[in-house]
View 1 (spheres, rainbow, N blue to C red):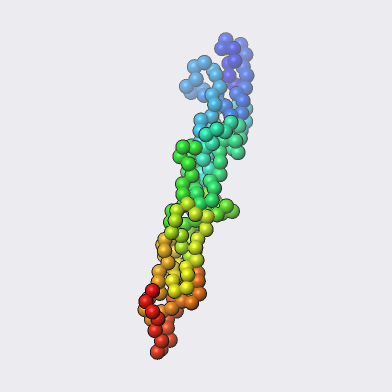
View 2 (view 1 turned 90 degrees about the vertical axis):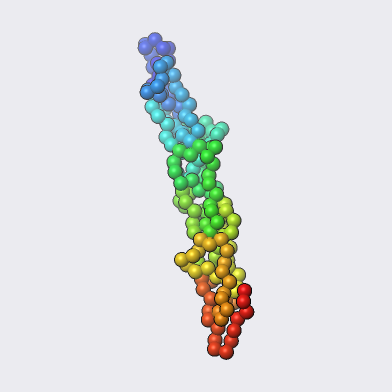
Amino acid sequence: FNNSGGDGQSCSECAAGQFMDIVSSTDGSCKSCPDGFYANDTKMISCRLCPAGQVGLSDGDRTSLSNGCEVCGEGKFSPRPGRTSSDKCIDCPTGYYRGSNDTPTTECQVCLAGSHQDSSGQDSCKDCTPGKFIPENMSVLANCIGCPVGYHQSASNQPSCLECNNGEKSAEV
């Protein structure tokens, strides 16, 4: 509530998107929630942080979560709450991705064995082509590894190469 007349005789509610700063306000006025926050109710004495996985909207009215905060899009994430519009969502690094249906939006997913991602900010991983692989414990690599001499792989999206049979050899990749 704020002291609308400043005379201590009447009070009014702060609207959604605003709060009554009881700590630093000297005139009893309502203040708009800052970027990275929202107030979805009246009579609030503080604003709520945009949750992790979202960032504040620079031009939102901040009267609700959807009017004050925006979910990070494909290929992006936000690891902590209260990020402002100038912070922006962070691009997923190479070796990681985040698709539109991937949750949570607080982190990116590591590419699976046999796939890779050589660019940041992507929504999917690329399959390793025949003759190349990425093992499960190294799936954050940006590029697939060529099968070593004496090994081969004719399929795509594989976590390993196969040893050549006796009397056979493979070409260097």
